[in-house]
Image 1 (tube, helix red, strand yellow):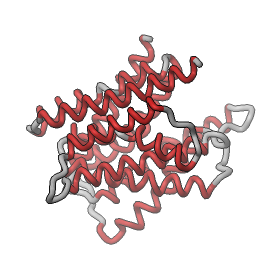
Image 2 (cartoon, one colour; image 1 turned 180 degrees about the vertical axis):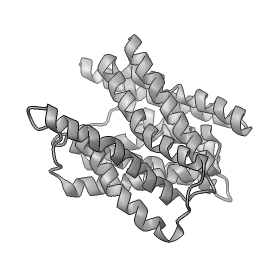
Image 3 (cartoon, one colour; image 1 turned 45 degrees about the vertical axis):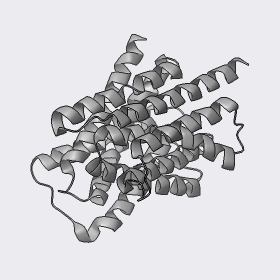
Length: 287
């Protein structure tokens, strides 16, 4: 449990640093350029790992991708999700972005049911409804329409859900290293193509934030994976929920962001939905 706690502290730190980096670069460097550098840094980190694994493993280490089309689909959704998330970071309080992002499991349930024909239980339906209710409380749609920035982040969460479902399908034939490598390999030229005419040369500390974003994007998911190797998923997800109060404190201290009652209520509903979803999976396994 001690080791899993340390790995989760690493994951929480990585997610928060990535958000701070995105906020610091907001309005200075275009999002597509940030995503390009994110992928390039990822490749620089992964290539040596792949080379080492190839030379040290009897099985040849890195496995070349077998389902290119699915990799492309996954990364188109993931890229769109990242764009919406980074855009939201510059438009909304950090806590709001993270809270809406926590609805990804609910959209994953719906997508898995529609496209993979996975079973859906009453508890899962209740979890989805709680999550949607939490979003409504946070977004507060009115007759004039909902906050468009919140809708952008919500769209990003849905794109992430499609990406998660694609990852689940890829995991049947691809190694985790191959999935991450293909993510960087596909998204790097995509980001380059979309920002090529709007290049901004990074200056000074901007380079540091770009490197931090690239490294933490990998370290966050690596730390969570390692944490799951040392503890149950319920513990990992529970620890991951500390991202919300942690990023809320960061938003208040660094950016003087407001922490409204509506946001608190929405977070409680979304967290309750996540707990119900986890509990539903756990009881299903027991049966």
